[in-house]
Length: 360
Image (cartoon, rainbow, N blue to C red; front, top):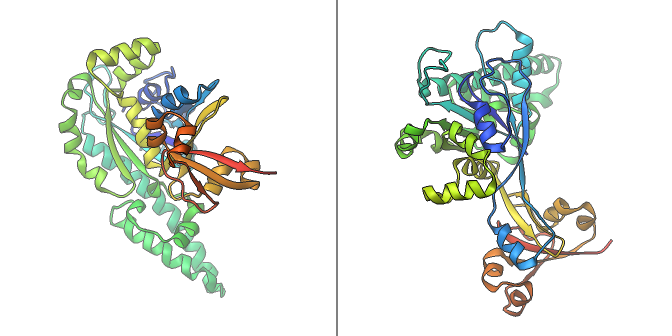
């Protein structure tokens, strides 16, 4: 799964990218055409540490999300090719992380000349809406021509796109609409920007971070929209922390009384925003966290581990993580009747520890 980091130039997108990924991409590059930065990030999951104690594996593998730092959005319209490439890059992602500049820094002037987070959010959101409207208008013109020559099968899509256009014309993103499964399938090929889940990130300075609750409260309306979430970060500080060794980072968190870094919280929220949960597998070779969508079955989960396991699926032996954590071993879970046997159609729950039985 890929999450695109977007926002206006000099909002701190690349700094956020570095803070999340531990990368060292150059920051402050004010250019729409710069190459995108890409990194695969492990999703924090403390349950793996406990499974490692139980199974004593050779390897620990986390679920992963790919982040892409997309060049800053500009409105000058001087380079249509770069603008088209920018929009295309966003369309390929599964969800968006919009970095919103709140921090003050006289050495890094805002392109608009002043700091106004609400204005910036409106600017970026309006541009995403505009790009979706352009796509819809073009498609509606083609459908109208097709229907004139008798292609009535296009009519359902015509009505669906008109519904989308009406929502966008009203200034709302498509993610506010509750599409049916059939409608979602019809629209999937368009990869509408405003239909994607959105995580707004308030990029604060250290002084503002001390008052982060107030900042998030001021923008709480953003998280009231479907498939939308809100978080905050002091990206400059978090980027510095990301360069620490693991022991230095742990000591830093202990001194400040932190249970979780803001960068880790963003990765976790990204995972949740994508509609993902994690099931777990464990053994002497490896303990592993596997991402799947909510409501997926044991048979589908087996395919995430290996296609042969899915093809030869017999059953899934499942212990809830909370039970395994408490009992301390697979054998005790079985003895205490906490091991449950399920077939292909069992809907996997977050934190299920699964042993797949299969034959090929």
